[in-house]
Image (cartoon, rainbow, N blue to C red; front, side):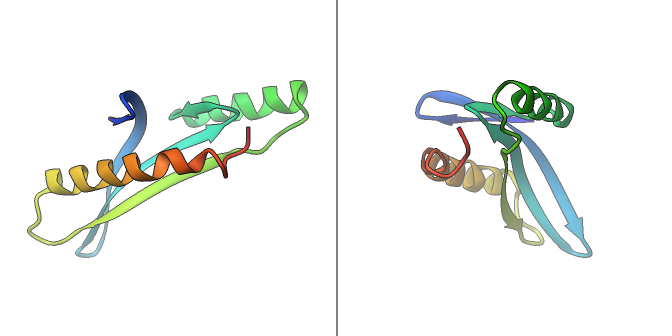
Length: 99
C-alpha cells in the first residue's frame, strides 16, 4: 500500500512491482465507485452487491497506473514519477467514474 497526496487529501492505493523477464513496472491500483476509493478486493465485491440491492447499480472502475522501471533504475524515482502522474490524473477521473 502507498499513500499519494491529491490536493492535500491522501489517496490510499495498492502498490506492486511486477516483472516479466527483465522488464519491470511499478503499478498503483485501486477501485473507485460511488465516491468510494477501495483497495480491498473483497470489500469491492461487497459494495457491488450492496449497491446492486440499494441503488440498482453494479458498475465501478478499476484504476491502474503503471510506469516502467528500467534496469538499474532506482525504484524510488519510479515512485515519485507515478505519484506525480496520479496527482495529475485523479482529479480528471471524476468525469468518467460512475457516481
